Image (tube, rainbow, N blue to C red; front, side, top):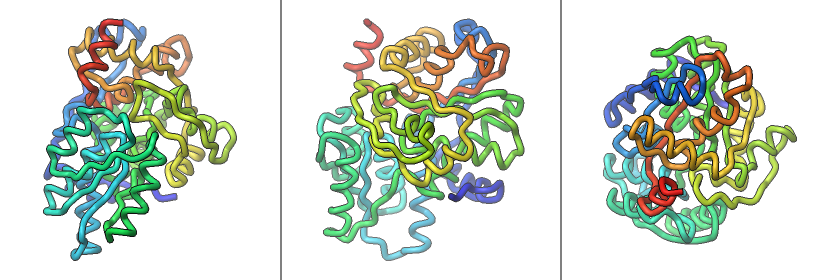
Length: 321
C-alpha cells in the first residue's frame, strides 16, 4: 500500500494549483446548531468541476504523460465526477478521453463530461459493469485506462485535506465518504504527513455497503448496490489498494441511508445555500446520525462537502420531500 508523504503531497499540490485553486472551509452556525458541536465544512463543491475529483485527474495525467509522452488517449469508467476529472485533465493536456458510464447515469453529469470533450459510452447496469467494459475497450483501442484509485490521484486529492488540516489542525474527527477510496486515502495521507491524531471515519451508503462489510470482515466483500441518491458511493467491489488503507487506518466505517443523505442535502441548502450531491452530503449525514456519540459530541469535526453535481430533477425531489 502506498501513501504519499509530505514531499509527495507538496509536489502534487504544485500541479493541482495550476488548475484548481484552494477551496474554503467554513464553520456554519446552523450546521453547528444541528450537530450540537463545532463543525468545519470543506467546500470541494467549489472546484472548477464542482467536486474534489478535479484535483486527482490533473496530477495523474501530468505524471502519466511524463512517463508515456506518446500516449494515444484515455479511457475511464465512472458515475460522473471521476469522469469529469479525466475529461478535464485530458482536455488541458491535449488528449482525447472516452468515458464509460452505466445506463441510467446522471443526465447532467453525462452532459458535463461531453462538454469537456469526452466521448461518452453507456454500458452496463452499474459502475462495476462499466469498468469491466472500459477495460475491454482499452485493450481493443490501445487506450490508457485511468483507474478510480491510484497513488497519483491520492496525492492530488490529498491537497484538499492538507488545506483543511492546516487551517484547522485541532479537528478531533473527520468523516470521509468512500466511493473507490481516493478521498479517504488522501485524508489519511494528509493526517499522517502532518502528524495529527484526528480520527478518520469512512462513510458508505447503506445501499452500497461493500467497504463497511469489507472493513468488518477484514477482507474484500462484494455487496449489491441499490442507492438511488448517492451515486458517488455506488460501489459493488472495493478497490484493493484503497481497501488496504481503510483496513489499516480507518477508525470506523459507518453507513448512511438514502433518507439521511437527503436530509443532509436539505440542511446544506437551507443552512448554507450550497448544493450538495448525495455523496457530497454523506459526511454530514453520518455526523448527524452520530451526534450523540463521543466521536462527535463535544468534538471539533471536519465535513468534506465533496461535490455538488446533482441533477436538478433529483434535487427538486429531495427539497420537496
